[in-house]
Length: 360
Ligand SMILES: *Cc1c(COP(=O)(O)O)cnc(C)c1O
Image (tube, rainbow, N blue to C red; front, side, top):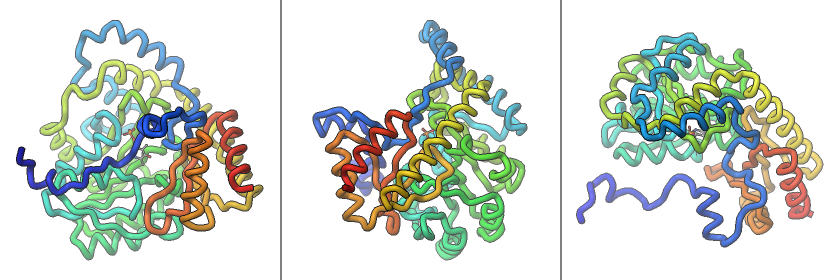
């Protein structure tokens, strides 16, 4: 069978090997699953209840316009509903956003080793990704903007707070990026971890709203990664362009009602954020105890900086043997990093025990 030119030219790799796939390859199950930034703190009980009730209506399609969820988001964020689009997580939204803006051959810019699904979609639609180096584990406004200028990029992507580094560019730095980006270049701001920030750390939603697209998810603080639901905020014309290509029944009923209930449960989310803060402090302390530098994080994970790349690989392999699932960062300049999700107190203790032993 003859493949399309674009697909024939793609490498046969996926952005992530999931823990479940790793377990199948390894032939054993992980005891401590802290490698995929999944929430360790469960799902809002209100969301669980709403989702359980919705199962009886699994014979019905979900609402293809995600009306109620969009209405609730518009109210909560105080934005017009025309700026909102819901889909099966940020991963799907990134694909839609790339598809409506990039023609084959167009250029996008991101940091090398940044969140891989963006690069995956850029390639998948035949566009080209140019990368720049992180600056000491932080996205570099200057490098991103220079590369956008140099390559005539249509899109610049950054996660903020960033994955895999955990670092944050404060609102003023995002403003500076928007000021120096070429006027026809759109910025994709992936805010998967926005729930872990204080409101004042974030650029207000009405700034640069004509050329900024912001992506959010129920997968992290809301603990609903398995339900697949997220949203984006963009210019209305961009949002309606997505209407032409999106999968209309892609978000299932159960995910819709679960997200709606979780969105209303501020107390639950505040609890998760508090537990994550505590866990991050514990990881920093573990790093100090073991003489391993950690990167200050605004997310639900912490990057531990090993002495060099070989040591990072050795430690990760050793942890894997000990049934602890973690990941290494994979960008030029970040490969010394081992990324560890903030687990429950018990998971953190399990990870700490095995890391101490591995480094002893
Ligand atoms: C986890 C993560 C995502 C994935 O979000 P989904 O809504 O589950 O697809 C996207 N971007 C970043 C930066 C992430 O860390």
